Image (cartoon, rainbow, N blue to C red; front, top):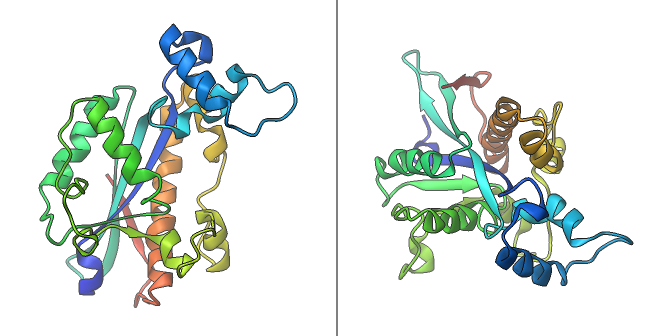
Length: 238
């Protein structure tokens, strides 16, 4: 297997509002949400309550992580490159974060590279903030305190596509379409995760969607690096 792939762990997270609705917040957090929501661009008749349902999940202060999926390229006994995924998911955020950290801590932080789409702006900071809120020590691969920029081994497929254009945002789904990577979108997309979790109570559907995103992410990375596999990619889930 190419050495370039050996130490990369692909990561995607799914987040939701910490409570089902705004009214479930305590008074102190209601006040804080209203202050934050005051800066949002809103449509007519969009109240703080509506905005909470739509947007709270993207802020670590008002949301929580319900699913983390990781993927890693490995080589099987036949010499074929496979992508192995593992999902950490559930209602107990602290447990899934601990399980994720245990996995990360088993790997050498000097060579481990975490890769996500928009990970430097969203996934990695969100993970760190929720770990601190849950009183979980940051694993070395996510603890950036005191590190020089060249010591931080995080990879970001959106950054790889930006080429220094810091105002440019391109979704994972758009890049997948451009590079002809099969889409992860099925019966759910990111905007529906909060509803599927709080109303439909269907964690399995969210987990499956997150797994598909990691498979797309890992394949997109190959495209951005112009890496071609000799055979069709084999994906294994655990």
